Length: 112
Length: 113
Image 1 (tube, rainbow over the protein chains, first blue to last red):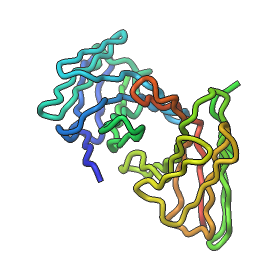
Image 2 (cartoon, chains in turn yellow, cyan):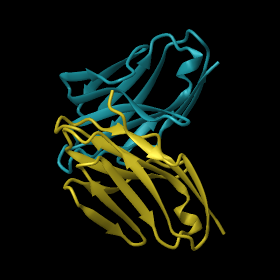
Image 3 (tube, rainbow over the protein chains, first blue to last red):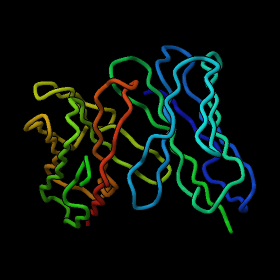
Image 4 (cartoon, helix red, strand yellow):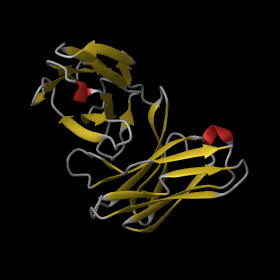
């Protein structure tokens, strides 16, 4: 079983704060690293797919970086808003065979 | 209309009962997956299927079985439910194009008493 770890498990920030969290994954047999956002009572939705070492992706105030050699990805949120409150999941794709291994998620709560 | 639907959305059952969770999709994807989510454990893969004739066990398949009735339908069965199968169950689909990006249904919350 592949080891995909996310830290921290949970995070409480104030509105306007910037924050970041980490996903660690195996550095061998890398194919892709996915970030998903999961709001309570909704389905997880894809944020980013990252495939190359050094990849950086950005969507509005959210951005992500990727280091496949050392096996980690960071997700950054600039100027957090209450609507950013969600669980953020990373998922490691180790082959092209179509399976993803998910981390346990980081629960972000942004307080007004 | 939702692209990936799951029925039922909530279910309470008793230990020893057989229960089926159903997933349907209109995305035209070949690949379908069943996951369970437990607090603090993320999503764990139960079974996956790449087409009607291809069914594969995931990391936690014991106590579960699946049926791929058609490209659009993938059902998960608990033959004899037990309390530690209480969880949130997600179905997902993928066309395998965007590095296996997966699209999730709304989830089924199952409670086994």
